[in-house]
Image 1 (cartoon, rainbow, N blue to C red):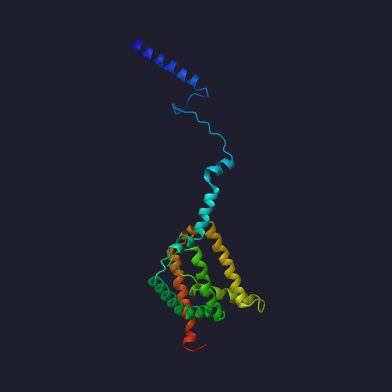
Image 2: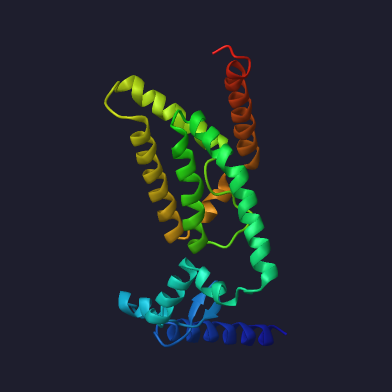
Length: 225
């Protein structure tokens, strides 16, 4: 019995010595917690090789990106030019215009601007949006909250720099800055950042703005101002 145990121990010792000697060989599997691990040598990858793997066909990728910028190219050729569709779209356009004209003029007054600037902003955004997007549910143009914020900025600028800048100049500059930011977000495909804004914060802001606008219109409604 003892001889068999000694023999087994001897064999185990010889096996451990063999493993320790072989492990010094770089081609032999390395040891991790007494478990053989295959040796893996990862070569260096330069930037050009990585870019070729990331974008195998730059021309095709660039053309696809340009098509995604102008989705109108994908559906305008398939528009059904029939009397029913043309009449329906015409009625929809006239209906929106009838509602938009007085609404945009009132939004301009909330922004402390002349009524014509509300008309300008009501159709310019929609005209440009038709080339860059396809959503039929997005509201493009002046809204109450936006008009209120623009009016606040114009009032603050006039108080800080009286007589230096006219209201429409401040509003136009603000529109250009916001448009540049929106364009950058769109080109870089960073629209997902808007999902980080919690819905309760948006609803609270909209509700507070609505109450503020209604309270601000009460004096004019009651002919107190």
